[in-house]
Length: 294
Image 1 (cartoon, rainbow, N blue to C red):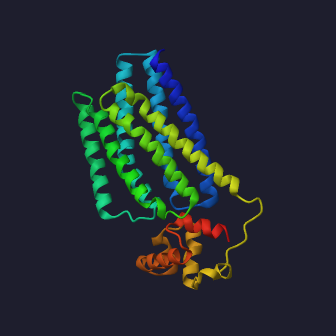
Image 2 (cartoon, rainbow, N blue to C red):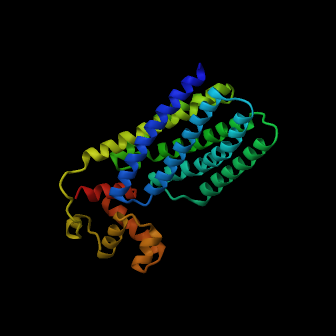
Image 3 (tube, rainbow, N blue to C red):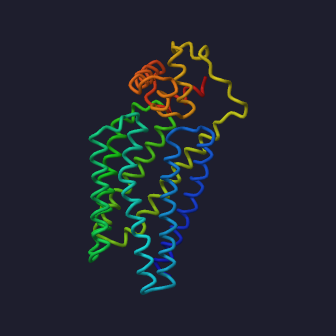
């Protein structure tokens, strides 16, 4: 077996860890019903699918060759391309969401364009002569996305009120920093690319699992009392702001809150900004943590 056998063991371990993280994420979503958790579950599921496909590739390499291997590679490579393009947009988007920064036009235009260029060049590389452009390009774009994500989180790390979120961000930063040299070396040494994805996915899954284990450990056994306006009296929350808070707790988006309260999205944004100021938080996660402590 050699190296391919080691790759298989690494991918299997990464897949098992990812499955556990996915199950915990689904339970977390069922309990909290936050607006971002379905997207995160889709994101984690897509990563697991890629790991599963990579496991299949290793099996094919071990036990077959020739035309079967070529056909199988051409079937799953487009899936990998689309998944990588999705990650180029999702990773920075999710990072800005965690630190309560708006996904502004410069960010969205840049990363959607980067994703589009990636799809075009990767497709051309798949159709025509393969010169390693796809692997090199994916690694290079991953570096760009990684650098942006690290920099934007580092810049706003002290402003994250929630200790749990801050801990997760610090852990992801450490993991990302440790992988940057490996990513750069993978541009030169192709064999490193075979272990880069499962290793990073493994580190990411373990981080999510630790965060969720801490969350579930802190859940009180008794039923949490219903939140009332009186219990939030120290924050001087108005009745309208309290209505917004209840809808935030149920996981509604700003647009959905506006529709339910018959107000504009801009008004909802103003209410949320006032709520964040009064409760001294910077994101919905931090606000929910404050509410759960009441």
